[in-house]
Length: 114
View 1 (tube, rainbow, N blue to C red):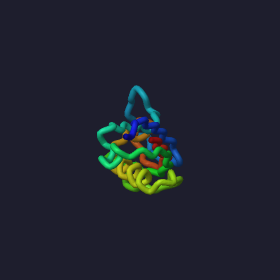
View 2 (view 1 turned 180 degrees about the horizontal axis):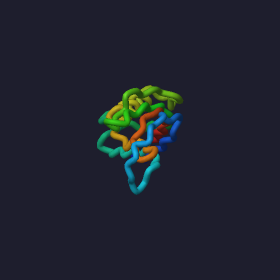
View 3 (view 1 turned 180 degrees about the vertical axis):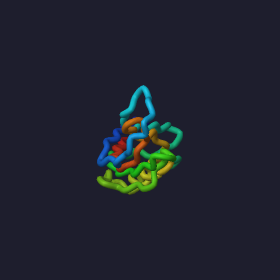
View 4 (view 1 turned 90 degrees about the horizontal axis):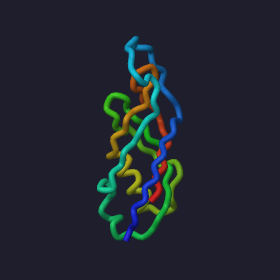
C-alpha cells in the first residue's frame, strides 16, 4: 500500500513582464502557491508500492490559475508514477505569482515526490 508523503516545490523559471496597474495591495509581490489534496491522486496508486520523484515544468495561466501545459522535465524512472504526477499537475489549481499586485503566468518547476 502506498504511504502518501507528498513534497511539492514550485520554483519560478521565468516571469512575464507586467505593466503596473496603479492599484495598491498589501502584498504586491508574492510567489506562486500550489495545494494538492491526497484525494487527487489516481486510484491506481492506493495499492502501488513504488516511490519516486518527478520534476515537471508547469505553465500557469495567470487568469485561471490552471495549468495550460505540463511537461516532464525529469522522470522518476517509473512510467506509472510519471503519469500520475502529470495527471495531478493538470488537475491542480495554483495561486499565480504576483508582481506589482497583478497575477503573472509563467513556467514553474513542480517537484512531485511520493
